[in-house]
Amino acid sequence: MISKPLLFAAFASAAFATFALAHEKGATGVVKERQDLMDQQKDDMKVMGEMIKGTKPFDAAKAAAAAHDITLTAKKIPDLFPKGGSMDKSDALPAIWEKWDRFTANADDLGKAAATLETALGDSANQDWKAAFKKVGDVCKSCHEDFRKKEQGEH
Image 1 (tube, rainbow, N blue to C red):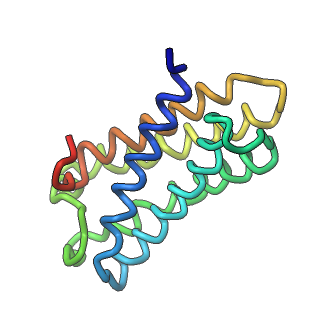
Image 2: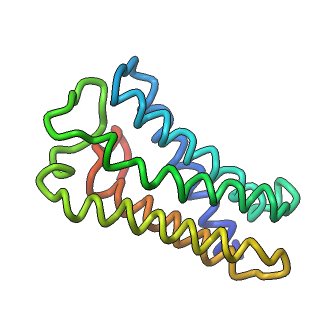
């Protein structure tokens, strides 16, 4: 039987790989800035996901640094989706601006979840970080489901 953390890590890897492919569309300006930020968050999640899967050894300091980075970048998300901004080469849905309060609350939730993860990682003997990592992934997934175009073949 596959463990829940391993299953989640596999799902997160597939979701982030799909998201990364969407960024290879030649975007510029604020669209490129937000894609770069999301790529950084994807890379941070990958650092921790590999530790959960066991493909990389657990390193509390590296994982905490990745969580800290997500905490900081989450605060930048709303500014990277200016009203009336270009939708060219973007997978952003108009729902972002139609449901702005919900979108910004989601970004805030991401920052809080990442901060909780960082705190859990402060004690390397604490296994609660895996549940906190899942929460970060859940917040990412929720935002992507509501505010990002689905790629062909994606459910």
